[in-house]
Image 1 (cartoon, rainbow, N blue to C red):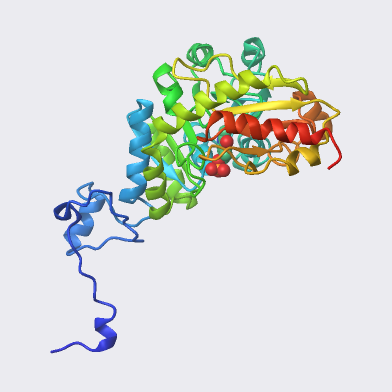
Image 2: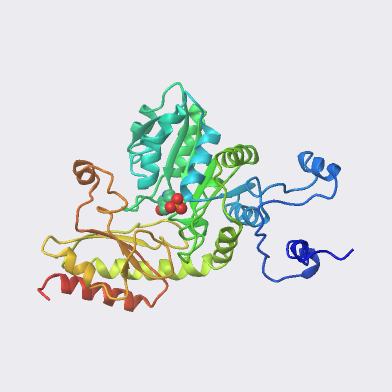
Length: 383
Ligand SMILES: *Cc1c(COP(=O)(O)O)cnc(C)c1O
């Protein structure tokens, strides 16, 4: 019997087996669920015979992104989630439970700081912040119920490079797990997992994606911890959409090229800015890895620089409350990433209105330097 228009318009897909098509790029599996021919096939999913049931539980594109970053980090397993923050939350919940305790670096990313100091309470998880510059302070903060040491490989905005080996050492002595946010360094520069860290997390919104067009997170580590974290992600509904995963994976392909160029540019710009008479301080790591020192530079301008004029005179360098795109951008830590801190807390860690974080892009290094120089010059004079 010929079907009605109403039926045909729904059942019209030319379903083809992706494997036989040999598409050069990974197809986007933009589907919320998967089909089964028989109840036996359906049961097969729960017996581990077929990989996918429902996209919140798993999807080929999100799996591809998690797997790719895991490989680059040298870790056996990885998962992608809806944002860096959800990857951090799922990782923490995989390692720490109700009634347990975390010792975390006091200088983490603003969103992480908020999660640690506010939200984890509602999960019954206690957190002590410590200056991770001071290993005695880290050890001193460990309690009987401590399960996790949490820090970042390179911090925001002052680019402190974490002593990962020393943290892993302490963790082994006290039988704790370690978790490191490797967003700023990326696996191009550092591999915390290979140094003994249990969980490594990325805001893939930043260098992994690299093009400022996707919000995503990735968590990598040992199989059983990632499985546990994946369970949390499924339960919390923190899954990444297939298209976003696809964009993240596409961006990732050029990570090496981007990081090489961006680190080289940053080295050049940081060195040149050190001699600038109107810059009080240039924060840029002396050494991150043999491949480079990353692409974030934070500067503190002299008090006589008018900051409104500085930001207005940056031309093609835009003010963006994020980082890691291919374009050079600046952010205003006092008003964005560290806005939630009190004035005293900001002062304590060195944030004031003259502090500018620069995310160096892939443009010509001399052009970046010239544009920043012009803006500093303009900040000194009435327009
Ligand atoms: C941006 C960022 C995060 C949060 O990532 P989202 O993708 O915005 O959720 C976490 N850690 C660091 C270091 C970041 O820069």
